[in-house]
Length: 148
Length: 140
Image 1 (cartoon, chains in turn yellow, green):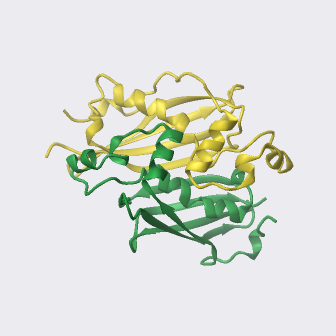
Image 2 (cartoon, chains in turn red, cyan):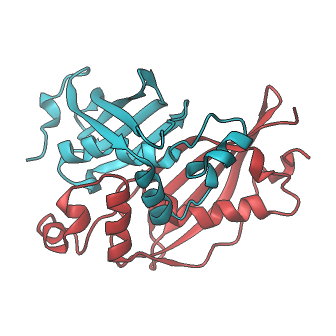
């Protein structure tokens, strides 16, 4: 089975909102060796002008994850999870993720390319806050290895 | 102290750091991120897909590599854009672990937008593991 080229341009329904917890931000920060007090200490975050702790730049992947699960589960997608390698990743922020945010992610498949028997699937997850304002777009390129 | 954008020159090293990863680090990242792919904690599963052993999550390498930039900029909120390409695995030996080294240099400066592009060289065992690793930092 190979990747369905008709996935290109497909927009998925938004996933369930993700509530960003302060302790989750701290836990994720510890896991990525983020030691800045603004990641851990609400007082330090407030002193820097944020209303609570700020998530590390790659935290958006936690919110994005449910959208990639949608893509991999798409019945006609033809993406075999066991053949997927993470190729590229990008996060483009309008504003940082702060503890207390309720975030909703919507996935769109922006590109599917074939390269040497492999497929390159670019998936863009647009993440907005409870007011609908843009927070971050997370873009992943997945490399799906072809049949050997 | 916020770095002054006009004082930056392309090629300046703004931060350097090295990170000692162990299997514990991978388990911690798995729990924090929700990525429980067993190739990041089981050698037998990693070997069954042709790898020499357990490797770090690419997203862990991406996540730690930007931290020297965050500390230089003074606030994680200043990193407004961050991208990498995953080019080589970081194998984490069960006993010896793995050391990932990061050098952050000024790649470009936009003095009007007050944005600096910081380019990261991220290496493990002397070879780069991330390509086109770039963080855009708002220094306004």
